[in-house]
Image (cartoon, rainbow, N blue to C red; front, side):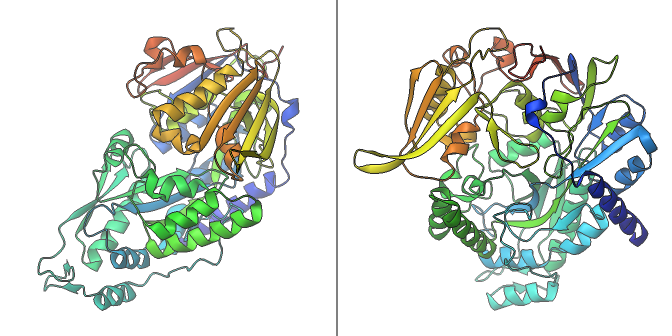
Length: 544
């Protein structure tokens, strides 16, 4: 094991050196350069790597196994590998709506029995790092001063004993003011076939919790089934990774009391007025300095409440097969991003195949929450802005320019954002895309209080379209983040939105409503096999 970890560290350093100075000029990218894109569903990581080696797929991403990384890195010039910093964060969550997880001393004790350093060393080699806080180290708002509890089972037992917990003769943990030991619990996780390291991690944590006196077993299942259990709040504990956003106010979506609703992102169900106040200061921070202060304060409060136990954050490692040029990999963006799909080309090859880690299932932008589903949806829908692959800064998307200002409305100061759309924008069916489309998207989400996006529009005051290329959005408060909340929403056609009777049961593929303005058009989806796209000739970057 020690030899493998040292090897992984060496490979990691080599890959990082290769892309340390990598950058790309998005203004020079016109695409897609490929005519047809296949996302091939291959759930097993080893099978994905083998498919790349055999030339059955051209790109795989999200490589987590040091053994696979080592194997692919030895493929000489047949495979090109890259590593990028990541907003990935894996944690173990607990259902605070249930006893005993509503007891903070128990959650703090569990935080002390997670052997983060050992897990990272043995499962991931040099491609991950222990995580103690609620924002990953790559975030400029990460608080490095957060307490870092070391693995100490004896200390955990002392913490519980001081709070009135005890153990019976069999070593089972007994809550204060009770004579009955805790009942068996389970930790939901993906299966070993789809996420072997996550499944293994869940099993090891279950062993640690059992050793503390909480009879625990891992409960692996299909990821879509797991998500359904989490959405229904039918769980004890779960292990799951998040790909967080670049803005720290994601903490509002994940941990504010108002987000503890069916379909909302506050999965553990934490409710704390003190935490809410701190996260609200972060959400409504008027400038970067106050945002930084509130972000650090919120992370400290979360580390005291422990609604979830942060475990690790890993880098994003991807690999591309021989012969493809124009792929994009920087220290901030992994090779399996939309930028590669826009610019990759190979003489004599108009078809590109990339591996998809799981089925996207229901392709509904209002209900889909998995990263897999949004790898598909993110190619169909476009937004008002895009993110620079090198700097992670804001770039024009559907909007060519914007203005953010503080104005006075009804005696109070609020944020107003004015977008100027690019000329000649079209939907994939060739119809014009105008300011009424993002306006109707924003109104539809707000009026229906769609949980997946409602946090973005919950402070909406007014949406106006002075002309077909101008969109004005007024929020009822001041916030440093309002711009990203609105500008990052996927834009849907107004003509489609007006025909939707029930957004929860909407089947856009069946209803002919899957119309976007992104770089690709979904042509076929065979569950368990593949998703097939054609390039969108009406896309704003399309080669002409």
